[in-house]
Length: 302
Figure 1 (cartoon, rainbow, N blue to C red):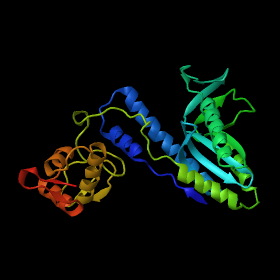
Figure 2 (cartoon, rainbow, N blue to C red; figure 1 turned 90 degrees about the vertical axis):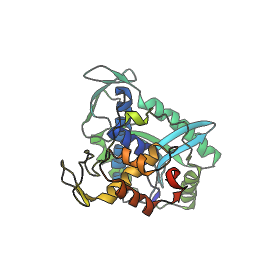
Figure 3 (cartoon, rainbow, N blue to C red; figure 1 turned 60 degrees about the vertical axis):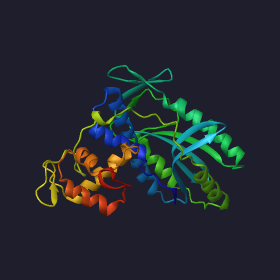
Figure 4 (cartoon, one colour; figure 1 turned 90 degrees about the horizontal axis):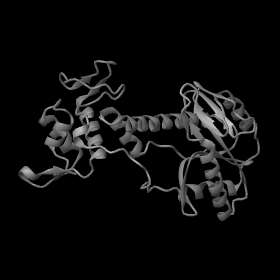
């Protein structure tokens, strides 16, 4: 049973828009793509948890404040045996574990050791369990979800679940046949209520209007669309067809997400969409989906 679903946050959607439209510096671009890739890996792990046959509760994507500190948990599983925390990594390529460090094999570049972060999260969560009088056993693992990931010299007793170990781990969980009790369900609901929605701590790449590509993009392959013929937009890259009004509405939503402080006007949207569509078409979509405010040249939509 899924107690809390994983949903793309506004922050992730903004990152995807910036990746598509952005003219950002390489470090920022890499950050965006890493976060998007990380979310894709978490969703892939979600699908594995959904297939479990044992009685369990799944709480996804938790952000908790514990003892004044913030910790994030990718996936949390409650079974009759206790609580399991999962940190999911979508790394790709060959890595080596040496002296408690993780390095890219080809470049010898050192990356943050996920075990350190896992230990911190585990210790904080144990404090939370004590505060909530949740007397369950606690385990925690780092899951490397990508099949193209290889790790050399991994310690045998480490909390790492490599791609080749995932199938065995899931089968082991499925073999648990005991039922959950009321305390398991109560704790799961408590965690859901404690989840933090204020993500003010979240770091975000800088961007502005001038640095973003104007235009409309295919919903399927994200290729820039060309000027439509009639009421249908067809992607020249993948052939996907979409009604023009739906394309316009998607681009308006992107504009609102990136620039909530700007007024929503026909002219602003016309420029944002790269003047692909007529102002008449844009105005029609705005009137249908938003409320007109103001008068004459100063009017806008909300």
